[in-house]
Image (cartoon, rainbow, N blue to C red; front, side, top):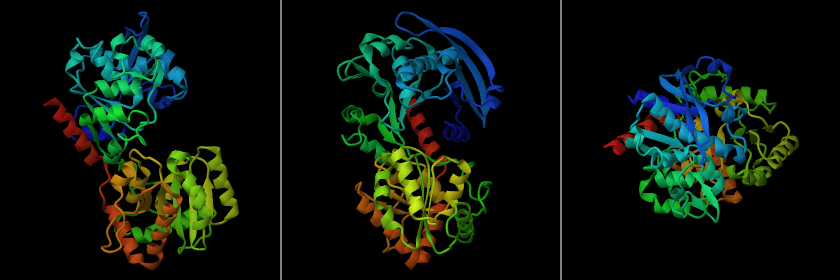
Length: 459
């Protein structure tokens, strides 16, 4: 919601972003917001109404309108728990449309993201059917299908005030007495997108479909994948102030060594140019393939290898990485935290980055790694498969190392293939580093695909 709108503005789209005015937004931004008006809105099935305030902030050419309501958005974090989140996002979906009507800003396309905004297409085709907004087309993007906004029908019916007929098995209803907000949005929107082509196919299977695979197969004609990009204003090796030494494609081979030595020193690792340094920047959860890494780490730790972890998550993984740091002192560093500066330095300082996910709708870490001249080692799933071309030793092509089935032995094999190339055929490795840096991973290409989709819908 930061990078895509900014890229769309560059392509001459008139963009407005609507967000809740969460309390955790830093005060330096809140105090610059301009009051654009307010009104009362009927929300619940019993006619109960709520205040809707509109606060505006313009950033990088994009207009951000924040929906202001103390009752729903006064807690510190955006996501709290489902009991509180269901009323909050019923309110937000309806308030977003009501705010557009109030401001008389009638878009061609309303682009919604995940279950938190999934009721927007439902409201648009029911309670807002006879308003000026009825001409708008809706797109719903699935970023991660695991999260769907499922709760019992009476609760969602009460808080949304939606008509009874949307609570049927083709729209919101799931199981015996539950409603699924994401499912309702998928039914009523004009187009469904996911954040990679491969993920668009995967979620139509039982393994990845999170119980919505049949529903997605039914709606497959309106489903497509557009891979995310990375924001080159934030991720730019030539200007990144967080790095020990800036570099570009012309001097990456020397400057990465400098970043590597400094990283080894900062993290208390043995300083040695000839070590193969593997990085892992991730939430430490099962989804990210940490059980595979956990099981093979002793097998990859030889006198030529170092391993760096950055992230937080499940205590079982936090503790096992702490154990490995102790067991391989000077060659393993486990940063059980999230630190933005350290993340940038790891991307620039390691030789390879692991992304062995069970499923990965798009994945950004492999994109950032490639842009920073770091070779990704990934599982062929979702966006990882779409963005990393496996290395081919016969014609010296590809962008990284991949494995297909979710198997620890195959991950170990991919790491060993990477190490073999690094130590025995360095010029091929170095060419891959430069190929990766040369690849266009910016939002420009993705934004153009979104713009083309918007135009297709409005013709």
